[in-house]
Length: 211
Image (cartoon, rainbow, N blue to C red; front, top):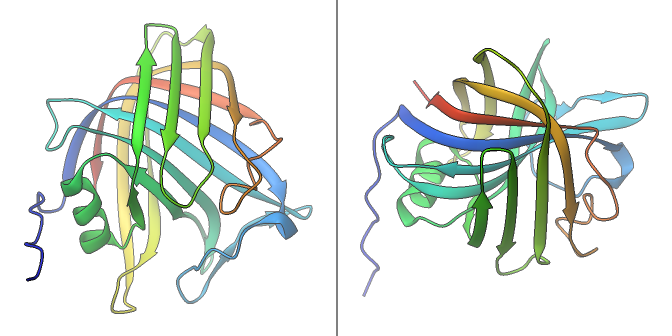
């Protein structure tokens, strides 16, 4: 008997919550063999690639409430710079099914422990096939304005079709220090024994994913 399909909201998703974003510069040769859409290649400068990680607590008030750890790789898409989600874990079936079906985001199931206050965040993730991940973050400088930005992801749907995913976000930013600890096993070996070059909290954010 087939498992019934999990319902999920249609695109776009309007979401709200808190997140911590970290920027990593890693040797291009250390990247795992993540599949990318045809015609998309990692953005490499001085033999280093750029990764962006997101620890997100999506809260009630958006179309879904769940937690997520997501890794995006900065890529060249034609003549433009974009992102491509290469790994993601969530703790909600609808978020998992919708991310895969709507945009080709390779979401997997994970179990999260996340504690946050007005200045710090502690998070842990356990999931099949990856080493245990721990993350800590502490504010250093709060910025006295709401930050707005937009970007787009380039993904590949299950039928091989390229999917361009616009993302818009605004929130209250703070610069801080983030630290990650994890094991050397793939696919997170690229983060093991390294620390991000920049971490940024975005609190009380409002975002729109998709079109």
